[in-house]
Image 1: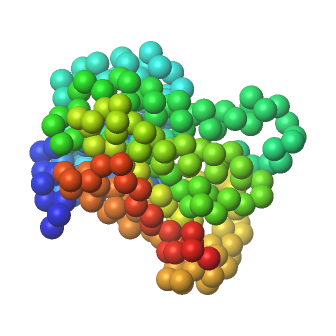
Image 2: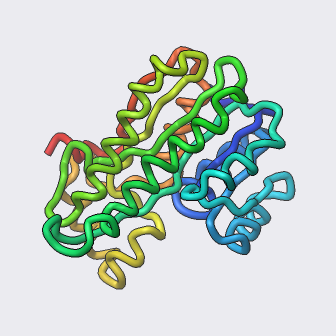
Length: 241
């Protein structure tokens, strides 16, 4: 198994208390990694960590707070891999609302990622990596989700431009399509199952990706020491239709 080289590696999952982040935590733990997950909500982070296993640690971290990020990573002498799942979206017209408020979700994804990179730039082990989270909205934007499209595109671009800035770190991104995660509960509400089923029917693979399928791509990027500056798409072919 390609991810077997993750045993005893230190992996930090930012935004790991639910969804794809939590799936990465579970899979990394199964491969014997030393996993730390973070979330904005302390109780959720601690509960998520304890639900995976006693060896997993859960901590509070707000990626909008640069000093909090610096303080969080300070005790780490070295880190092998980081996965950044933290992020949200904002739906609505580009011409409505307060622009700065509309862009808050974008800033969390882009600036939050950059704050983490700055804090760990000298802590990543040789052949270690940072993996960002993009999304199908980079290639297939939809009306009303312009903040999401900008956010996923910026995350994927980080995986390219930062390679030249920090060549000692492998930088990649995973780009999920519609994935069955709790994030969609608040957006799609009770129509979630029906909406996802309709989307799945249009995909070449006729299915919505699971968090575990996306997580397996993240661990692949962590474990393959020859991959950097790449984006792996786990979208069922959504960007092709």
